[in-house]
Length: 430
Image (cartoon, rainbow, N blue to C red; front, side, top):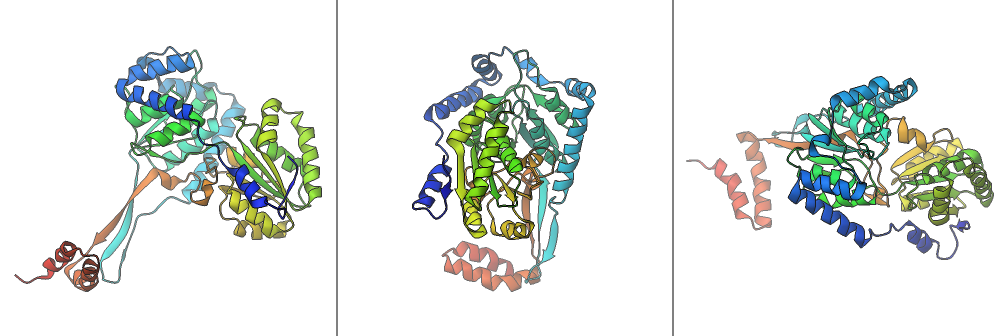
């Protein structure tokens, strides 16, 4: 696709069309609905039958669970360099989210009543970990442990022999997870939502997945809570003449290599020359990567290069797109302006040294972020998502006397005399 100029005719319409997330095909909706119905009605047998039919796995319900010894064994056997990276990521993720732990509080309102909030960790949560994604085990599990959720249960796909990626198992173990199952995809989401004879349901499910898994989360929402409905990966890079074309090209390719074919890759350049240099680097670097075929498909169908004249225009494009990941590869004096001006990005990487992959793996914020322009109204996964809150109200007689006139006024305005009576009756003399 050629560079698209911000000031060209029909730019906004073309940008909107490109950003449209394709509707989930009906066959996915129907397939997911059938699997969920089987699990809800048949329990363990439904799970086993689905795994046999879709994944070619012949597991008995007694084989679903991953033992604690298997997880502990993965920690002992894992190569030292992998273990070091996992521990470093867990430490950074925990440190980052510790700053956002909610605090219960109380205060006095204008009536003299005590008001406040109490926060409680969810009682039992489910973590969905896609195949091989040890980082997702950390980006969900470390937060759940920090929130002190009493029951954590993880689900992850397994190989034909029932084996699970050792790095995933080690990450789960080091995040304090004791209950895990070798069940993936829609079966995992259904099991978490409805439970089976051998597996308890959860209160809320966390974690990304493919189109089928995300559709399953959408369909079970209401039966249990869900965190996000994240779609294919997205990145938007704003680059000016100070940007290193090699860095920008590498970051665009990194997100393109996820390989679903539905990724969205945006380059917003402050000049056509910048865009040309980055395009040239993409062609050079792509030859050195292992997923070239997948990357080519994404670049052909999901890559949009926009040329703007000002940083203000760049910010407008970014705010419209609401990208999952956004990189600001611009001169340092423009970082502050753009960071303040752009309000819809899931995560903002500031400066050329801040590769998106750092956020994916080790920087600290969770890599589970809003996609498909949902950043306009939602945010990435936070530790507070593992809590629920209750508001507190405690009135004394004297405080009630001060509040009664306004409360009774609202009752009259809204035609709810019973509401007004419930206040006034407390102040009547017997």
